[in-house]
Image 1: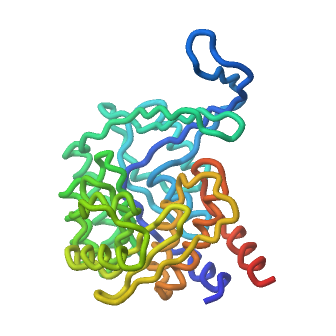
Image 2: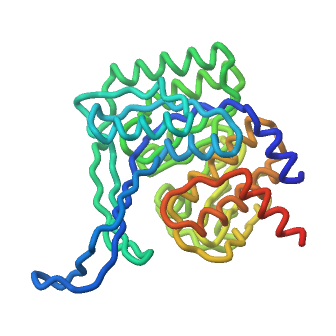
Length: 329
């Protein structure tokens, strides 16, 4: 399928995004000297920027590609949570199902950069499971949205920060099954084997190796064996593995070779957020019922674009159109 036709199919598709959100903060400056107090660079601060991260970045990618994301999650009732909700509003993302809990800390990842290089990352987070009251409220939201047929696909974006508990995952799987809604998953370690029966399962290489408790080299045979084991144990329809700057692997049929594709990124500045972009494209592909290979090819192209950007950033439909035009020249 041509890129323009795929993007046209994405328009207005409603995607429910459930998972861990975070605020990505970039403190950018310049380094002119080494500290006399310790052998570390002194950064003269020039600018500070906050961006949507985690499941919020997935929602942003869906929005910039023409879809209509609905975000369901829990944050702290703190300054970072308020800033995150303000960024959602600025992006035109429905944040009415973002629950603020005064007893919880919003995840913040602060990166110190100088001359385009990351010097340090400071994480502030709460990784305990969300409260039963908050989980019950999310289950209520999700059941209502699915029951009213306001969802074309569901993304479960898991960063092991406690929003996606086994009970919530089981609830979403059952509601999606009842209403025939595809579920795509970007897993982490904690709940890796709790996603049985989902439509599409997309770990990265590190997560795949952790789940299988063995190294998985980036070779056709090793990836085929690993994906077959995942498909057998989870009963999912598709397995897609993101391989950072090395591309994307996709497995459709059990026992048959998968496809290993390079991202084609001309310059890799930063792989942060590339997995978020891939799952966003794949979710829109499932929502619009386009062929898997077409969605994977577009996700691959989108990942290449994002890897050329510094920091967590979405991909825009116009960038994909531009990349398509360049490839035709």
